[in-house]
Every structure is written in C-alpha cells, then in structure tokens.
Length: 261
Image (cartoon, rainbow, N blue to C red):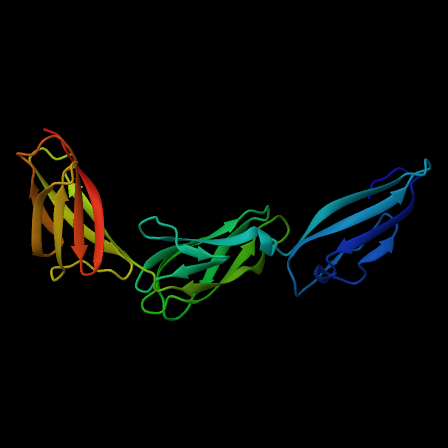
C-alpha cells in the first residue's frame, strides 16, 4: 500500500478467507497474497491505518481469484421464436420437444472465452457459439448445465467453471397461434395456424373458426377444417375490425382481422 510515511497501526485483511491460502490478516504495507486453488470469485483486501491527527482510515481494493464471482454470472433462456422461457425464482422451466437458446450473461469485469458446454444427454445440441448454446429438449427438458471457460484477463489464461445451473421442466407448454395474409384484407385473406412447444399443427389437425363484426354479429362460421390454413372472403364486408375465433379441440384462440377496401 502506498501511504504517507507517518501512517501508523497499519493492518490488513483478506476477505472472504476461502479465496486465499496462507495468512488472511496481518500488519504492514506489504502483503503476500496466495490465491486458493479450490475456489474462484471476487475478494477484497482492506487496509486500516492511523494518522498523527488521531484519525483512522481504511482503504480497500477488489481482488479477482481465477475468474468472475458467481453473483455476476447468470443464465438467460429464450425459445426459438424469441419468447423468454418461464422462470420461477432463479430456475428456468423448459418444455418438452422445444428449441431453446441458452445464454451466459457476464455482468462482471473478468473477460471469458472458449466456452465449453456440458448438457443433459437427453437433449440435442443444435450449435454452440461462445456464450450461447441452442438445444432441443426432446422428451426430457430438465437437467443440469455446466459451463467451463477461459479467463482471458492479462496474466491469467486459466480454465474455470464460471457457472453451473439446473433447468427445470414444466408441462404448461405450447400455444396455438394464428395469422392472416394479408392483413388488412381487401378481398380475401388466408387464416394460417401455427404452434410452438408441444402443440402441433399439421395436415391432420381439425379445427373450426367464427368471424364476428364490431356489433358481435356472426359473419362466417366454418367447421371441420383440416390442415393449417383456410380462406376468408371479405370482398363484400364493410371496412372495419373483425374478431376471428378459432377452436382447436378444447382450446380457443382469437385474433383481429382488419378489412380495408
């Protein structure tokens, strides 16, 4: 520590003690710091000293041991359609038969590179790109994710395990979606169904739809449709916003169709 020559009662302490081997407290300006071989994270050295005026001062500095602190590393998880995965507390809940991108978010100052991902054997690895992995959960969405990386800070270049986490599973998965092409409609639009998660829309999917105007008057009803799309003729309809309700099995979804000639 660089301090005035008339400073006295100089003491120091290293915290937390688990990050260091050897002495973690002592006296004097100079400290021989021995990092732990078993732990990593953010530590601190704190000096305390007195001046002739009788005042006592403290000075401290952060010390990084091997890599970032666990509190500065988090997972973030998104479905392939850009929707963030459900999260309870710090645990993300994944759905069966779904594609996800898992991100490692490093909010600290320690740079990392050369990420290596270890994922549950039941998952399919689509691709990895440094701090991102794309996976398909198949029928077993839960499991542990372990990541190792290289600390590329000056003078380090050591391999660490910056984050480990468990992904949970949920059965509250999948939604049906509808879209119109074109929307607004001038004479005719295609109602197209899609799904994510465990839901599936294919040539065997059977469904029905109803269209209501702004006065809640039924304009069209079509039942026993198969496949993923159907045509809606709007050529004789007044300009305005219409509500389309689709029923698939026991599920009901709705969307707005705009008509503008």
